[in-house]
Image 1 (cartoon, protein in one colour):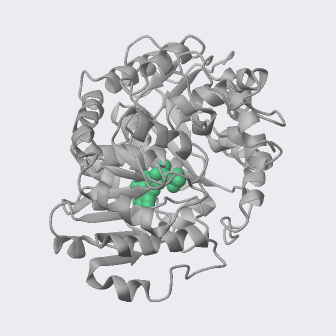
Image 2 (tube, rainbow, N blue to C red):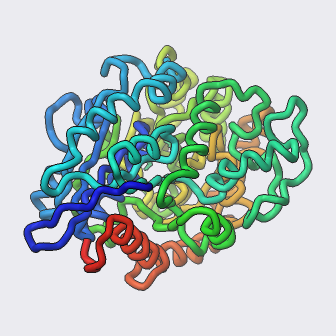
Image 3 (cartoon, rainbow, N blue to C red):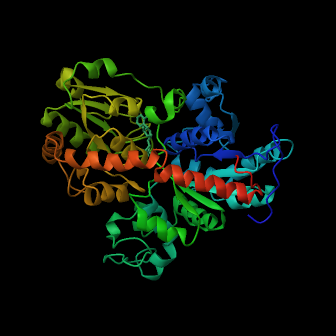
Length: 485
Ligand code: UDP
């Protein structure tokens, strides 16, 4: 940004970085932002973390608690906490009224953020850096207004970022935004190997681009061209060419995996509660099952599954005869349809399986009885499952999940598809593929992919080095040269 405020000196006489972190208010964004906050604070940066009133209310069940209180008292990290309105009443059903929610984030949220930022800048140790989710449409504008260094945090794969970033190229070539879109390979995006249009993010495949999410994506990817740095929750080894090509346009740092893994971040990370729903603990049940015998099934926090598909999956699970833990979110079909599983499903499954509304996914994935994951391919879920070395059965539903499936199945070979044709699949195919997965079809490769992930976060690993370079960049942007955050 052009006019960056000179930071105040801290009590050691050094200038000090104070970053405001603002996640997009969805589970899959709040989680990596929380762990990024801990990572940055561990580097000596003061962090003020912002949740919306709604997200705060969901996580804390309405209490006044500060979600970082445990981390602060355990490790003394300087993480502060603030909440802000997203423009809608806390009790409003955001799942049922998805477009109203997104419209509020597109048009109204900005005003509340501005008011909050105004109260946090200036004075001794005031905020001088803003790290906001790439999906917001306003970061560069707000940062410029308050003289902050502007950082965009992209919580998905670099490949997906690059496709959105080059939307203009896709349009020129008729692969996006035309009445009749081309079906041949996309082979002109810098740093991206030829990709089939069916593997691009779902929003890039739609011919009607008037939806509120499209308006958000269009504006957000205009705005991100004006920020100072982009952080990405991926690793260099996974997406080296794509990242290098992006780096010729914008400082882009791969710093992943930003997930709650205990041996890296210690107990501080796991002591922050981030779940928007209360977690069922299924450890006791998992303890009774043989090693690698349980299929974990979850479609994340956001996507909906049609009742028809859910019923076929349910019957497929029964046909497979495997043990399972199935997270059936109360709104998985719709918050109007609270009991979408086929009648008698749980009775028929008996002791073979349990159905729960939500869980601590990392706890389940890292349990030794879990041997497979039927997933919607959310990016956090992919990073987490690689970390836990659990191969996947892919059932992407929308957004980047479609592209993540390609990475997982075609490029890294750490999973298989649930079905070949999503518009026409049945219980027999589901049952067959569950059995293929649980027989260990992808087990060999995932160990090697996990090693890359682990290699990135050791001291001299690429993500740690990139984080260091990013912090150096921040320091020089705010006019610091003493090498201390
Ligand atoms: N998650 C969880 N419990 C569940 C299901 C999901 O803790 O029962 C977490 C999961 O560990 C991940 C996040 O919710 O960190 C979901 O993010 P992801 O990117 O996988 O999917 P999204 O919800 O954004 O579609």
